[in-house]
Amino acid sequence: MNVVPASGAAAVLQAERVSKWFGEVIAVNDCTLALGPGVTGLLGLNGAGKTTLFKMLSGLITPSQGEVLIRGHRLRRDVGLFRRVGFCPESDALFDWLTGREFIRLMVRLMGYDGTEVVARAERALELVHLGDAADRRIGAYSKGMRQKIKMAQALAHDPEIVFLDEPLNGMDPVSRREIVALVQRLGDAGRCVVVSSHILPEIETMTRSIVLIHRGKLMAEGDITEIRDAIHDRPTIVALTSTEPRRLASSLAGRDLVRGVEIDEFGRVVARTDHAVNFYRELPGWLLAESLPVDEIETLDDNLQAVFDYLVGG
Image (cartoon, rainbow, N blue to C red; front, side, top):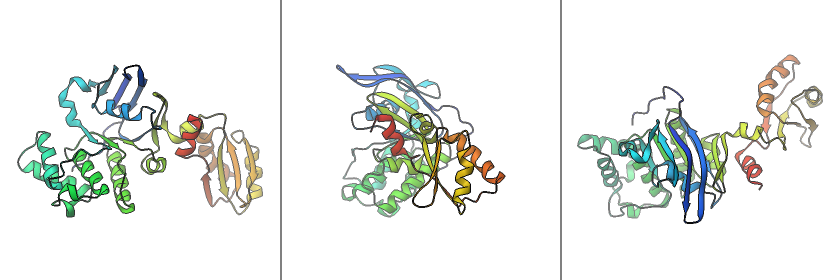
């Protein structure tokens, strides 16, 4: 599969004030977002509207109002745009009587390819997900992890610009998880627009720092985890620094405008609190160099996806 870097960072996928209701139940309410090249994690609690938004963005269902656009074109009004989209669903809808190779070739033919192109694309997709050795086994005999991989293979076989992965790591063993995480990262680095849905926050964090968080049908946050965390003004970011001169380091940090508080914890680390983490990390190297302060390790104690998620939804 020829993966080429993106030439720019313009929005590839857009949702303009999309909503979806089922009878009197509003599943998604007036969501607007724009996604460019790279990997984005779509997060939400059960019932938050995550799955409904995921299906609207991928064109599987029509919004009750609003539009989904690919490169400025309306997805549901241009059938040809679906060739730019690859979708790996959470639930299985596989033909268990086919082998993995037969299934992928069928999916490639349905995308409009024929002849040697079908064979070549199927083989590349199977190798991408490390299923070459099991390609001639019937899908009905596949494990849960292998079924996940064959779904990913069909999502990637036609070389889509936009890739949707719904809970892609379910049922995979640790080795397979590392392989698929690495694949997702490569796709994002190469300029694909990859949207990954997962209820396991550490899994998303291994793939990307860019998230879209939906809660009770509305978008609550969008962007880099650190920037979102920095915008939570009522709780400072906590940074631990390991130094051979903790007291001198603590004294230096205590007088900075970006530092809300400093202490030395039970492990001898200097623990600083800041309301402006992005600027803090930008300025920190200069402070350390100016005063020749030794620092062996820097760890942000709550700048992780779980903390951001808990803060935003009130967990």
